[in-house]
Image (cartoon, one colour):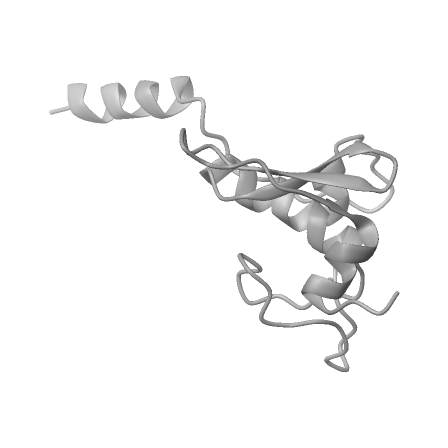
Length: 120
């Protein structure tokens, strides 16, 4: 009876899956994904509803800039094998897909801004 909770607890501690943590005020985290996470009261887009909505794999969020959207994709979509964009040269991006038969697609920053509806 006591054995089962101990085994479950040990399995959870040994698991490679750890919950995401949000940085405390004043704490530095070097990860790009930490910058993507909202910080106390801040959202990716302004609270007045500005920003581009209904983007692929945006998970219901709005984004004021292409950089914020691409950071979101890198941090949230990439770990679950959804497509995301990686900068391969200054101003040139390549879509990363995990599917074995997926075709590589490249686009410039201007093309991505136009495709996703960003003005700046």
